[in-house]
Length: 136
Image 1: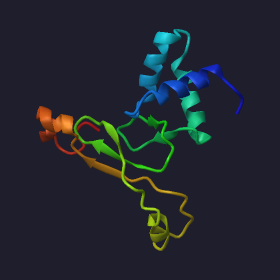
Image 2: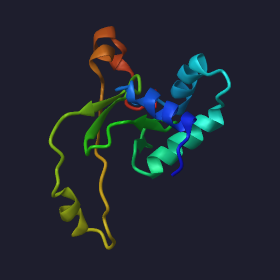
Image 3: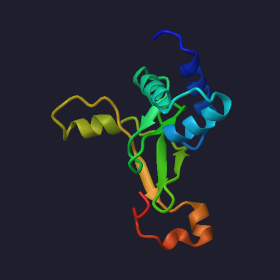
Image 4: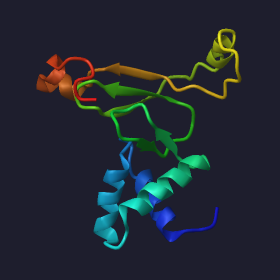
């Protein structure tokens, strides 16, 4: 992949986040620094960075993809009320792929595990009464 100043800016902006932003969030932040950048450029570069393994694309949240600069194997928690995505700092079950391969006729290349529930902020604010998945 050839060098691109805009791709570097997109990757750097994502690295400031630990909240798994969408492309729209990255775009809004970059527009403040570079009003000439387009949403298509941000999407294209996030897609390229994910394809080459520099970042992770998370497709399990609402309708929008979220992006993660942490490419080390790890799990996520998604709040059913607000849609927030949080890293779960637990050890990854490395034998899970081997166990699943006993039930799948194909080649397993990895897995993603997502815990769902209600985050502390929603619990504290009383939003935890929202039904599972209403916001997602």
